[in-house]
Image (cartoon, rainbow, N blue to C red):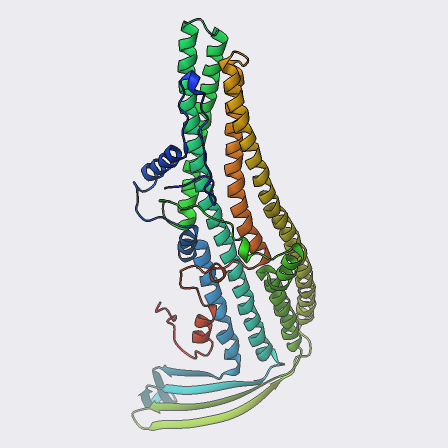
Length: 485
């Protein structure tokens, strides 16, 4: 996995090395980039020729993510609520038949006068149509449609969550690969530092204390390198979980700043207007309000029409009895009192409606807080990078000065080691800050409610939630889903 430091700028990176007078070799930009390429190739994919961009990784996550796929399945299940509710307007047709054995005997004073066996058969067909049920069918259809819209917003939020997780996983692998290379370079330099210090100790130029200090710094550097390798392994595992494949030859990434609102006020306005969590909560209010109307409809009369036809055959040894009948009946059912259950259901539905309205306010405040936090994090990351870049430049100058002073005996070995460690820490902070800025930009775009495959222009076939709905909303019959299952 080839990577450059930083992630979205090509800036010269030096390994933390000692001065030439101490016999240490300073790594220039070309050697560092070569080392990074070798680490990426050996760790992920054995030098794969094709580089993976963050857009490509997000596109793979969009198609692979089990979380997103299960939410799509949940949305398709919600689509089926509309034809189920619409079924209340449609007639129900049923047919029945029965067959049996019957024996008829006529007995006079203990003597059987007449005996016959028969096989009675009855067949009937019944058609029932609801004409009026207090508006519960129409309100049920509208409620199901609101639930479909709510599920689409939930799917949109799931898409945002998946894309943020994918961007984070991508940047974590980049960061941890860079940090591992920095730590490995630091170990190499400290090993050379220790060797030179031991040679000078043998020559009587330094004391045993200088050797111990070099040994301690090397041990710390090795421990940091081990931890960096462990962090990279963890990041790789998460990348595989989120993206669906091992990271290979990852390219540097940039923040999605051009897609972000120009100001905090614009970000808040956009989020409060169109964030999927808020929209889902508003649709939940519609569902709850329609549920109140549906429950109130149970107090109104129900009118149904039923038509039926039946044929009764009972052939015997003497007769071939057969009768036919048909009927058309209109029924009016007026509820008077049902033990208070209906009234309790109405009161419960009204409380649930009030809860849904409160949820809208809660979501608005939650989203507002998330936008402010994400905006602050993104803006802070930009300023942090500027400050750390200045810190790195100053530490590079300071390290060079300490090395020059060490030549004339004005600085000790520990001074050089401390300066090297300070510069290393600054470079680690810079790498971390650059990762933070990219992730913060995606997080802010999601907080505003705009993060999607379409917004990012990912090269992927975007999922159309209306396609399945249009396929099933008018279905009268059939058990196969539109995908053939």
